[in-house]
Image (cartoon, rainbow over all chains, first blue to last red; front, side, top):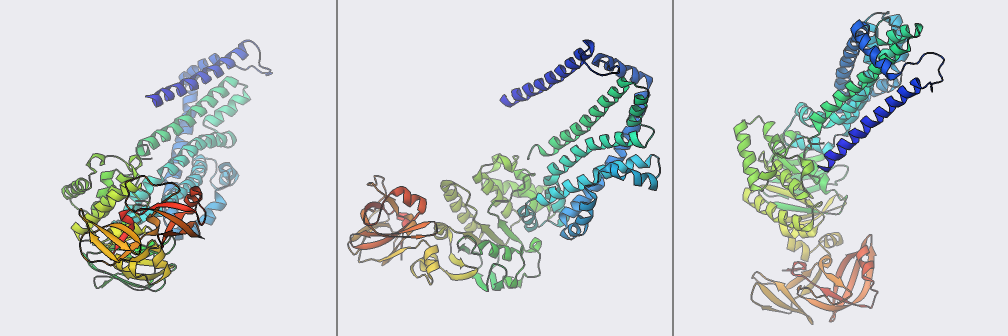
Length: 255
Length: 347
């Protein structure tokens, strides 16, 4: 009962802080407190713009392009990252063989690959998908390897002595126990995928939310830029929230 | 069930170990931390590599994977799978053998009722007490009906009362199921309570193997003497059998009341780490209370070995350094001691 009350209070404080932020934004524009040389719209104007842009289909089209890229790139990156991470975490030989390669490639930011990929792939729909794949693949490999290796050797030995083979041990004992680590990777990288796709669209791809923001910058439409930023923030939150929910569903009972 | 034979076992921790445990017996392996006790269990179960041979009955197990050795292993930390419920933990070894669901349910019910854990079958390990975890781990180990049982200090993380209850439960189950068992511990009390035979491991070798009392009264090395509680051996000059399973023993000028289940005896072993010491008179109902003089104290690692003079007889007592310092007693000081029944073994 007490913990429920605490949760309720914590959420209430969160909503309150958001309202304060919006209030300050609205007031500072309405009372002329902002020092910007260009027109900076109040929150109420941005809210109206969102409604308008939804009707105009402009935002929806750009959003759809970015969403498809993120979904394709992230799903491919996450599934292959988890698969390779499990293999590396489970087999010492595979780990020894692949660790140097992963260690070299992991620190390179996804956008660092952009010039090279533009030359190799060209500017088409595959480019952002590959960028997001790279963005999500390496960190998820890293987290999955850590999760698998963190499972206590005693559990594996106990399962072995109870008669289980490698596949059963992985499926029933090791992967479920590595889930908290895997979900950390998924949560962080699902947000990172959105940030990366927008950056890539700003630089190299003529469609999507990032491209829309660049066009708005040319037209000095701060309101559109703000709408896109809010959509981007919401998408990061929704994706991270989805994985948090999934994690709770799968691990909260025992973790 | 099966007998176990180890022949010239050597690895990073064991040196040329030869050991034999008869079918259905419980052997308690005693040794200090790092002596190689757990390694010995890991060798028998096939979890670590070794040179030499392990036989179950007359079958050599060296090339057989742990998965197929048919060994039940109760880990010191219990190693309950945290992501599975109690029921799923117990059923794990049966499911991997592709048993029918009805048979699995039947076996799980049988074990949970035998170990009185029916009420927690749907809970996860994180919500269980130490004693409950121990019971669940034991049920899981027994579920596939292994022919050999290996227990690695299963009571070390439990409070003394729970440990004592579970100790007697495990012993009666082991006898009932007639399962060959190796029980590893550093607690000599467990050795006397449980063992058909005792093996003392010292520095990776077997220092001595034998019956518990035989080892107590006739230790072959100082390490065996020390690991079995550094007992003071006294000769009985006169024994008077009393009622209620007791006997009065005179040894020199010392008179002691001991537990006696019948039979002849002429020697006493008083376990030094079970003697209770106090600066003030002991008021509890423990028999055998004396006033003694501290004649000498020697320190070894974290243990104080105290020589006590009682009516012309010297007894050895052991205390941890912390407890000894708290006693605030010096050499030549007077001290009050009590020797409980559990501290006296007869032969």
